[in-house]
Length: 295
Image 1 (cartoon, rainbow, N blue to C red):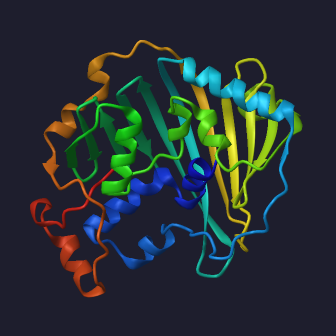
Image 2: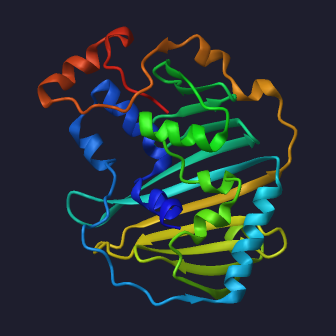
């Protein structure tokens, strides 16, 4: 769970990464960058938890994992809301919506809209493509032949991250169980996702997460995560809806004609610009912009 949920909570709007990366590449104002900067976990860890794994909670997590792992393809809508401190203290909320389509072992499409710049991401088993429609900029790079390896490379090379990536993992429970100390059933809800859900709480030494899992379909409907050591208790929420398991997805669904015609920039992590250079960068033509990835 340390790998899975730390990544989710530590990336202050994984789906807002597109706006952050694009803002960095275009040299937008420091205010925008500061408001959309990742909220980092505090250096001091929270107190260690005594192991408390309720069998019913573990069974629900395993059933969810099995349902997801059995799907050869899937599509869903991911709505992410993350909090970050404002200039005056109380947190600001940032929300994005992504339409996700995945096909095992090596196809992915993520189309993301507001808040922030729209973005598109495509992976066809050979290349990964990050496209910004508004700026008509695209970054393309060779990619490994598996989804898991591609996601790692996208993060390592360009800071591209999707907070729902473990939903698409070959074994979601393996990621959840890593570092898991506490798991217990809270009860049931009929509100989230407009379906009956089992509500489970899980925790590691660093994170506390509440999950809503469909009673009948065993699909994850919502996750809310908080750093246990975060004095601000900033909340990070991922809601998944419009689930389709094993849909038929054409090969052309994992490519974009518009992206193929866009101006190219390097597939790389953004580099902060000095204050004196921001206005000049914002006025530069696409070919002259700093080489930063967009997602």
